[in-house]
Amino acid sequence: MTALDDFSFADLTPDLLLNALESTGIYASSGLLPLNSYENRVYQFSSDDGRRYVAKFYRPQRWSDAQIQEEHDFAAELAAQEIPLAAPLVMNGQTLHHYEHHRFALFPSVGGRQFEVDNADQLEQVGRFLGRIHKVGQRTLFSHRPTIGLEEYLVQPRLVLEQSGFIPTHLESAFFGDLDRLIALLSERWHSDWQSQRIHGDCHPGNILWRDGPLFVDLDDARNGPAVQDLWMLLNGSRQDQLMQLDTLLEAYGEFADFDPRELQLIEPLRGLRLVHYMAWLAKRWQDPAFPRAFPWFADAKYWEGQVLAIKEQLAALEEPPLQLMPQW
Image (tube, rainbow, N blue to C red; front, side):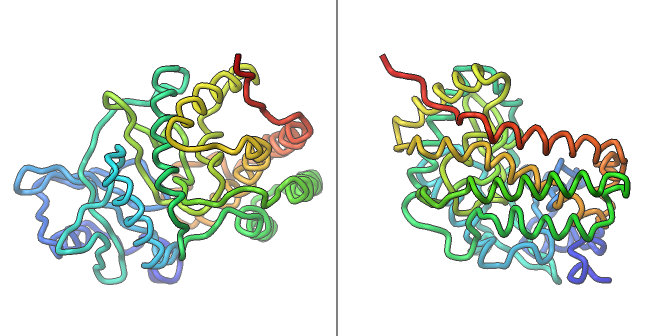
């Protein structure tokens, strides 16, 4: 199979990488250091003029050129508003480059330490910038990128898991029984009573670096969706901890963008969607050699026993009252 057949990077050799970079006029003077990315292939390197770059090679077939370009255009739009975000560089008049059947982009190499999710001051600054990101995102919708919904996050993943052969035989009845109950409840709780807008899409703490303030990275999952999608993954700990974190985030967020509190009802449904989607994502990518190396536990029966428990816990969480904003005195 070729890379175009199996969504993999089988032919992405060191020579091809260097030739691709040279096609843009960039000549690497160091080795290509792989960075922590599984969906795509991302490398850091120095060029012969002493500059440091990051090259991102997109997984074949995952996005169309138009969808990738929308990611790049959104990043440029945010950067133009002085929002701290790693945006692709314009090289030879374009940000999306082609070499053989691979698509790639170049970014400036940026460093930073880990964002501290339990640091109220940092959380406040993140909330402020998320408000600015969403203010820009509200200007229009993506035309080519998808909108968060049940088909992509539940229906298709359910089929992938059923056909994957990963679920141990002795767990199949319990796993799919609970999964179908979760899908039914998520379908019942999911509603369209929210304003769709362009969002980061995968705003977990690992996609925020800290350099005297937040630096947002990786818009690869940007899509149309509710604003709360970019907020809920920053909440952690007990329910009381999450309430305080949410209050900190939204107070700062509100300086730049309005937030519809009805979207808080979507937090647990969105968590459930991510749970199902993540399992199927690993199953779909298992033929990529990087995945068995990085996630060896995925093929272990203990993992699936844990997933049965996780589904049960998510079913229980969906029965709890949604988080609410703290009263303002």
